[in-house]
Image (cartoon, rainbow, N blue to C red; front, top):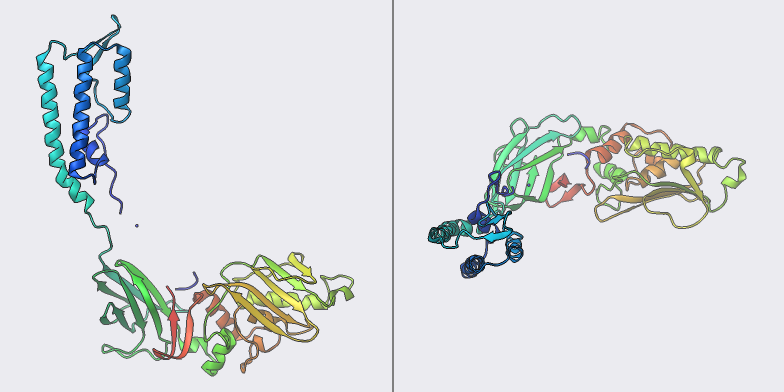
Length: 415
């Protein structure tokens, strides 16, 4: 898994044409039949009044104003009335012309019959249910580091239903009848197959599925995380922290500031504050962060490092404090388990790397395992594996559980 829409088509009009019944259908879709009858009555009454004004011989200017009011609210086709440019008078085709009156009545009857035909469609359109109705869910399972597909058992629990399947070529599909909150357990034993003991099982809890979902999850081989055969408890404490119970908390963006705090003015003892043995050790620690995170966090150049003597460490910064003898590491995360500030400190004459690397991970350098957290500047094989795993292969909020409700040694994953 790694780090971290159907619209109803618009009505298409025939070029250069206008359909009054369709237009009114679009405009008044959803209006009650009683209200719609009132609208039709008002519109027809308006048309009749307009023709009566024409028969009374209204001036062209007044007739133009009435016409403007109508056309501003309803698009119209070819004009019903004509204007004689030579006489500058308005001429109505209804004057002394019973045929035109019959045509008007036929038009109104045609309009009403067309509208009645459209009312069932109006009701049907207003009652369309576009809510999701479920469907297939596609799941793929791969190896975390190699990306190879894995054939392992999968248990799916959705709305009281339990599916038991096994991936084939890394893939499987299952159906849901409606949107569900599902729990998917990968590489747990079921009636179809036993789990692959080489891999740590994984669980997706309360995954909101709609249908047509694509879920890609990878599980990690035990040997890849623990090539030295360390105690899993010691390993998790070192690289996930003793107080976090296997929780992965990492930076998801570049820090905005790199700050060195010098409350005891140790750097003032040197002619060049940026080029001396103390600052050299701090810069090595910053470089170790880049190596540990597999290049995710980029170490700064010396001219980008701020030297401060007091004040609060800003958010989105990595800070190192030159202490008088004590050593510490500390990190601060938001509600999404994303780190927003890291702090570490030593005398800066040794072991800046261990404290600084621990500060960007939530790890602990006071570990029973010989790692970069346990002193020195060089990263070993296990350091590099876990740095890549935590920063490149696992999302914030994922967790390695030693003993929990699903058994011993499994992962909780986040979509």
